[in-house]
Length: 554
Image (cartoon, rainbow, N blue to C red; front, side, top):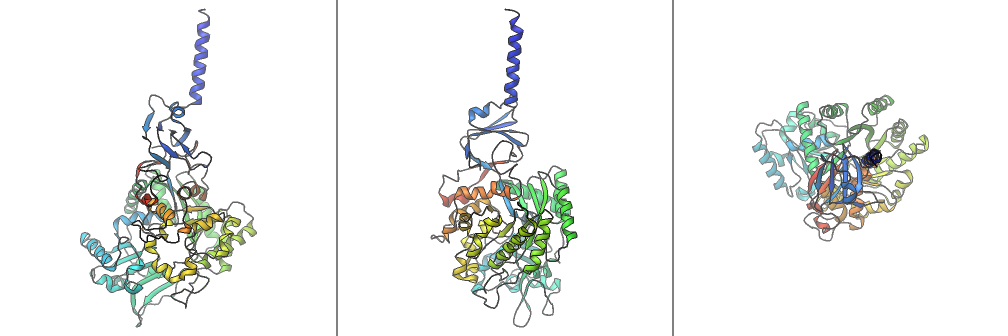
C-alpha cells in the first residue's frame, strides 16, 4: 500500500501538468458578457481569456474560468455587449489629431453659426498667429454660393484665417490670409483645382484642390514635439470611440518617423498601416523607396505596404471626374488628375512591386478609370491577391458595380459622408439619376464586393464610427430629419456594417489572421459598449458609447 502512494502522487502531478498545459493561466478573463466575435461560424460567446497581447480562448463562462489562476484579473461584464476593436480603414490621423487645436465648424447650420464659431475661437485664442479650422458645409452659404473673404472679414480681419471644408477639398480664407500669401488678381494658377475669382479677376475667398496650397503653405509649421503630443491626444480620443486600428490614407517619411518614435517610446496606441501618396510623375525609383520602407516598417503596430492615388476631387466643387457634365455646371464634367494611359502605367508598376494600391475615386468616371487600371494590372502582372481598393465611390455607373467582384476590388467607403445633412449641394450638382446610385453600399454588397467602412476624418463631419454605423443602417440624420430617409435602399444591416468596421478592415490591410475578430490567436483588441447595437432602436445607434477599450490585452 505504502509503495503505491508515490505512484499515485506522480499520476496526480502528471494530470495537473496536463491540465495546466491545456488551460494556460490567463492574465485576465472577461466573463458574463455578450461578445459579438465577427466570426460568422461562431458569432457569439460569453467569455474570453487574454494572455499578453493575445486572445487565448473564447467560449462559455465555465470554459473560460478554467484559465483563471491566483493572479488572473476577472472582469465581469454583467451582460454587457462587447466586440472587436474598430478598424478605421481610411483616416488622416495626424490631421485628425491636430483638429483639437482648431476651430470646428461641423456643427454650423448657417453662415451666422460659422461666423460666431470663428469669432469666439479667435477671442479665446488671442495669441494664435493663424486661425485654422475645418468642417464647414457647402450648404450653409446663401443661395448655394461659395464662401467669400468678406464672410470671415466681418468677424476676424486682423489675423489670417484659413478653414477647410468638411471634405478637405476646398478652403475658405479671409483677406488677411490672401494678403500675407501675396495672392491677388495678378496671381496665376495653372494646377489642378481652382483659385475662384470674381468678375474682376479678384480672388473671392475660395480655393479648390491644389489651389489651397497658395494659402496653406504660408501657415507656420508646428514643431515635431507639438505633433507628437497631438498624436498622443489623438490616440486617447480614438480609444474613446473604440478605435484600435487605423489605415492612414496619406503618408510621408517624416510622418512615419513620428509614429516610429512613439512606438519606440511605448506611446503608439493604435495599430497603424500607411499608404504613401503618389502622383502622375511617380517613377520606379519612387516606388522602390516605398518598397524599402515596407521592409523596414512591417510590424504588428506599424507597417507600410500601400500607396494612394487621387484620381479626382469631390462633387461639391465640381472636381470629381464624371462621365457626363454636372447638372448645375454643364460646362464641366471634372478633370481627372491622370490620363488613363498614365494611370495604367503607374498602377501596373506599383502592383508589380508588390505594394497595395488605394485609388481615391468619387465620380463615376474616376471609378471607371480606377477599375480599368486595375484590370490592366491584373492582366499584365497576373497577381492573384493584390487587394486593390477604391476609396469613397460616391456615385457609380450601374455598369461598373459588378466589376468589383470580378477584379477583387475592395469597396472602401465612409457612411458618414452619406449623412443627409450634408448632401444637398452634392445631389443638386449631379442630378437625380446619378444620385440614385449615391453611396450604393447595398448594391455593391449584393454584387459580391467586400465592403470596408471608415471615417476619412478630418475630411468628414465626425470620426465617430457610431455616427457612421447610424448612417450605414438608417440613411437618416441623427435628429431623424428627413424622416423619410435618403436612398434607404442602399442601407445595410448592423451585422454587415460592423464587419465592414472590423474583420473586413483587417482583410483590407492583409491582417485578417491577427485582428478583426474575437478568436484564439487574435490580438486582444476588444471594446465594451453601453448598449447592444443589435437590440436597440436603430435610430439610437449614434448614441452608443464605449465604456471600456482593451488594446493589446491592456
